[in-house]
Length: 308
Ligand code: B12
Ligand code: SF4
Ligand code: SF4
Image (cartoon, rainbow, N blue to C red; front, side):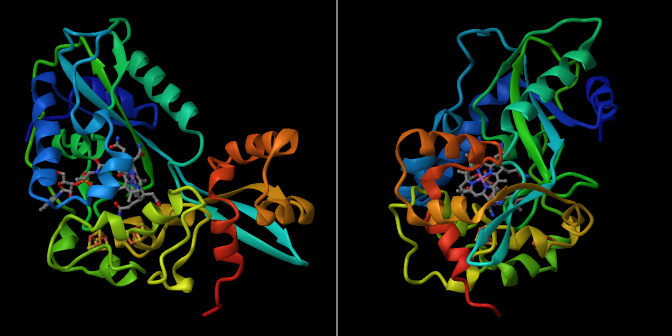
């Protein structure tokens, strides 16, 4: 195995991690995702909602002569917000990667620039299948839960991809690799509350994932087959990550951020949002990576959840 590129070693000094491959693999990345689509392994409804340019990535107009694809991983903990309702304090988790997205993307770009210094290369953010790129570049490995893992921080990190005119002397493209324990572990399969993670295939059934169901606009009620005790985060789901042995250390970190008074919580639970009040609430939720669009459904599900 080739040694880590100097650029990536420098990036690591700033607490970020990275991977780099030649831009000639761009089409392969898209083709790999699309071949799953063609084989009918990806749900059509989910693809309609999520398929974007990252499913068929192209060289950006601003950098048509890009030489490399760089993916940066920035570790991120979970955060918690507290809602006050009828005398009760309900603490809810916001999983990593929902909040501070702009700050993290800015940091990724900035640290990459510093790692190149004194040389200067162009960086254009890319809409790419970032997990696949992270695994193909050797930065991360896939878990059976289809999330990617890096050493020490497990799956608690955010990935951002860039095109660059930097021409790496070595192409670090490699085969996809799973975490070593996945061959004999089924903790995430058991922990998944909706059966999205399968024993019979590596690719998850993403259309069954609770995250898919609770990221949608609250006009979509949860299907009846979702067990009311499944809900565990105000958006997304942490069950397969919390159960994973590779996440034990990173899962210890959780910052409390954001508190909603009785009045604010009651407003969110009423679900009638308009005018200046809604705009103010949207700003407050935005600082936690949330939006009014998932209310009141997701909060109700957590407050009404049967205790086990
Ligand atoms: C669409 C999407 C979703 C959808 C579908 C998820 C999915 N698994 O496809 C939904 C809404 C369900 C979702 C949920 C979540 N998401 Co999401 N999502 C995306 C998005 C926009 C595209 C992902 C994609 O391309 N999926 C298509 C599938 C086909 O690709 P894939 O999952 O990489 O599939 C590969 C594996 O199955 C693998 N594989 C198949 N067979 C085999 C066999 C072996 C042996 C091996 C090794 C590998 C392997 O190869 C496939 C590709 O060829 C990305 C952002 C981006 N631009 O990439 C974020 C992203 C992947 N999501 C992210 C996160 C954090 C999540 C959640 C954890 C959020 C949460 N806590 O609730 C959950 C996790 C659900 C899960 N278990 O995957 C992060 C992942 C960060 C990380 N650490 O890896 C991303 C990168 C966003 C970001 N910038 O941070 N997500
Ligand atoms: S819980 Fe086990 S099977 Fe699932 S991703 Fe982690 S190590 Fe792999
Ligand atoms: S995020 Fe939740 S629902 Fe989705 S695969 Fe993981 S455990 Fe299952």
